[in-house]
Length: 279
Image (tube, rainbow, N blue to C red):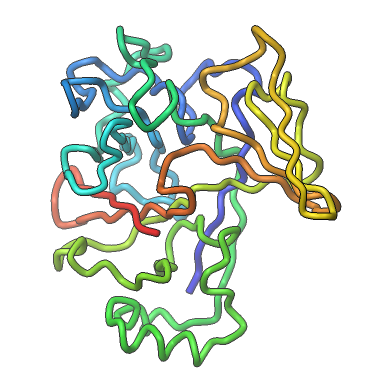
């Protein structure tokens, strides 16, 4: 099956946003307050992702469609559907600047002021070698485990491969979440709690959050930004292992190592979407 992986760039290492861009975290571009979901104690939820229609990577059914995902930073949407919001709106409804209503950046009980912000700057195309006709087997637990035996070259639980758009879901070790997939909903994409970048991790003063460095002896060293250098749209933290060719950004609270899954119902107009997360 064909699928796509996004290339990300941290917002704190980028120029300020001046137009609608597909991204995770931060503040939404031009979202009217009446559209902003609330949850615990009527607090505004935090933006998880704002992603524009861009087929074939993400097909939202209309060239003007923009997907929005939100999460409550008090309950994290663990057991409450009200703690997770997902909807598609026409870009004509969006304003021409970042939305910043009162309380949008208030810290939650289980999260910082904002979900860590990263822009999608490009896409890479992949083919995992599994025929599209086998897609239904991903929603049957017994057949899914058999698929994993049949295609052993796929690293089924690799966190670096757990962010993907299209194709088939890469469920966590808990298996397919059938209770979250009514018949008309299809897999759209998934995002892992960590985003991976190539090269050397940035300095904490540049990125605006703490950087955790693990040396060759397995010892962790934490470096924090200087006073006044913290940035509210930065990740929770950056981590880097000595000698590794990549570093990672932990940008959202999904139970320390979770993955979120987004489903779409193409029989509705505009298409309905829902999301959940699992470890």
